[in-house]
Structure formats: C-alpha cells, structure tokens
Image 1: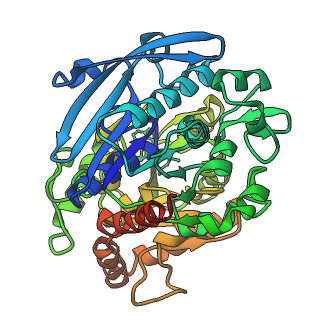
Image 2 (image 1 turned 45 degrees about the horizontal axis):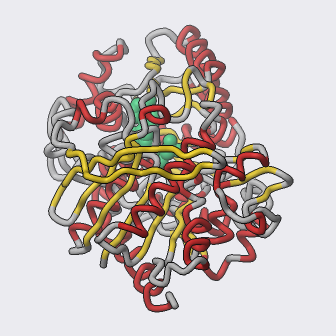
Length: 483
Ligand code: ADP
C-alpha cells in the first residue's frame, strides 16, 4: 500500500512527547512490512543542519489561508527503503525556537500554522504523482485534514483517499476563536456542532473526529475511557456517536532505540540472562545525579512532562510520606514551573535521597530507565504511555495507575502472579500511591520474586510488529470500503 502519514512532530527530527516516538516508529514499521510510506511534517529550526542529506524538492506551495495566500517549499529525506519524510518549509511559521510554544506560552498563531500545514498535506495527497491509498493523520495539528479532503472530494477529486485519525491525547484539541475557521476556507456548513464547532469555537480535533473515516487512539482502554464524560474532555458525545469507527491500538516500542544490549547511552549492557550490568548502571546513575552510590537502597525514577495529567500532585504527596524510609528518587522532567518548584522543595527536604533534573535529556532518560529499580507513573490519565514499556524492557518495575495504556501494558500480581510485570493501584490519591510504593519495598526485599518480576517484564513484547498489523487491517478495510 501507499501510506501517507502526517504529524506535527516525528522522531528523530522533532519531539516533545510520545507522539513523535509513535509516528517515527509506525512509519518505519510500515516500511519494514513492505509498504511505501511517506510522512509529512514541518521543517522546524535546526532540522536541516542536523540532517544534511535533506534535499529540496522542485515543488512550491501557494495556498489560500483565509483571505491571504501563503507560500512554502518542500524538502525530502529518504530514511530507509520505502520510507520518505517530507518537510514543509515555511520559515515564518516553523523556523522558531519552540515547536508549539516558548517560555510556557503557546504561539498566538498556532491555528494559522497548523491549518496551513494541514493544507500543504492535502495538496501533496492530491497532486503528488505518488498516490496515497490512505491518509493517516495524528492529533489536532493535522485533524482538519479529513474535512479538507472531504471538501475536495465533493468538489470532484474522484480518487480522494480515505482518512484515519489517531488521537494521542484528547486533552489537546486545538481550540481557537471562531474567526480562525475562516483560515480553513471550508464552507460554513462544516462549522456546526456536528462538525468543527465546539460551543462557538473552532475545535480542530473535533473536526477530525467528525470527518475522518476511522478513528484510533493509542490503547484499548483509553478508547473506552474517552467515550465517557469523565475522560471525554467534552468530546465524549461525538466519540460515542462514532464508536463503531473507533478502536484502540496499543503503541509499540522502538526496541532499536530502547534496548539494554546495544545502547550507547548506557554505562553497561545487560539482559534478562545477564543482570550484573544493571547494578553497574544503578551505581553510575547514583553517582551521576549526586546520590549516595549504594546498590542496596531501592532507587525509584520518573521521566515525565511536568503536567497535571502525569499525577505530579499525588506523586509529591506520596514521596513526602515514603522518603522517610530507606529509598532514593530521581526525577527528569520539564514543564510547569510550579511543579518544578514542588520537586525542588522535595529535594531540599530529603538531601541525599532525592535528585531532580529539569530539562530534556534523551541520554539521561535511558540511564534512569536502566539504573532504577522502580519507575513511578501515577498518571491521572494516560492515552498509552511509553515510559512504562521502556521500563519493562529495562527490567525496571513500573508502578502505575490503572488507566489507559498503563493498565493495558502492565500485569499486576493480583491479575496473574506468574506473569506479573509491575505494581498497579487505582485510586487517584497520594495514599494509594504510597501503598503501592510500600508494596514495591516489600518486593525489593524478596530477591527471588523481584527477579521473576524483572524477568517477566524484560520478556514482555511490545514491539511494533503486532501494532503495525492492526493499523494495516484498518487501512485495508478503509481502502476496500472507499467508494
Ligand atoms: P507523553 O507523550 O504524554 O509526554 P509518553 O510516556 O507517551 O508521554 O512519552 C514521553 C516520551 O518523552 C518518552 O519517550 C520519554 O522518555 C520522553 N520524555 C519525557 N520527558 C522527558 C525529558 N525531560 N527528557 C527526556 N525525555 C523525556
């Protein structure tokens, strides 16, 4: 098949979170499975310098955006056999210090930037010599594409491809003032409560939910959760209406990137059969972040955006209680200054027990995954979550809340003592998390059980091989039902 993906971030070219990892890995897995895959993404600052093999394509965009016309150029990079990335080069929109924001303030023209990006994608899908059999868009930044394609189809694009939208996080919907709708140049009848309108505002993700031929999200449990008022972020009604075209597919992990045997980020290689290296990674990590190097003190870690979603409030509460016991905690995170302050205070209260690092650091992320004994992920909600799956592969026992992909990817003792890979708790309170941490400390003192759990965790397989076939089934169904 010819598959065209669109995403506002793609690893390794740009990344703020799991979206980039997922799209980068899905694209590679589709190409590996023998499908001609192309990805469209913005040319952000620094990409051309970091990837000097980018080639300029003889292609110019000159597209209406409301009452003006905007121009852009196109670059491409052949990444692997069957995999090409297209970069939309519009310096006014994308040559900036941040991707979506600077200094915690979203860019004021994000509607304009990503509506233009979506239009470029539709233009490519329509006019490239290479014809996509399916267009698969990701998150709100590309979610207007199905409506734009539908409109061109109604205007006579006979071979318009079917569309699939993946929701990576329903909390980010791309909501803008109603006047932003004019930038789409779509007829007014797309702007109503069954379409792109959300209480008088433009809602890009809602437009995707309304007009995509199929909708997926990144775990089965999250697909069920978002159709409820509690997790639906205001879109549960329309998601329930589309339930027969909505499914959840757990993200895979890119094990070429996230592995313990051939990984230049780690201090020492290790595997389920050769665990000595994990101890070495722990001692080196403790030294690196300034904690006492002690193999017998259980070390907990978290790598996260510091946002409400991630359960920072209950984590701070639970740690304040539990750090009086013999344990250490290391955090790598970035985000809300208020949460950063919370962790800084925690470090001040527990010197020698807590280490915090703020910022984005890929190498340190690998080292924390490898060096810790336990990984804390107490999210309020979690569409899929990748870090708990990285933890599993690194033999670092995840402690997770039973929500979304966390519930789908971790097995607790109460579910299956023989296959247990982690510890789960369900109530969203510091007490419930503290209790889960207490359980992990008990586990830590029972080496036989701990080793069995580590072994199960490291053997769990969340590779893209499985997920990619689920996406291909959807693409094929869409292709056959496309009139
Ligand atoms: P989300 O997409 O909601 O942020 P995920 O768990 O799905 O959460 O994916 C987060 C990704 O971003 C993981 O690859 C994680 O390792 C990475 N990450 C998050 N914060 C940092 C950070 N401060 N430094 C390095 N990597 C980070």
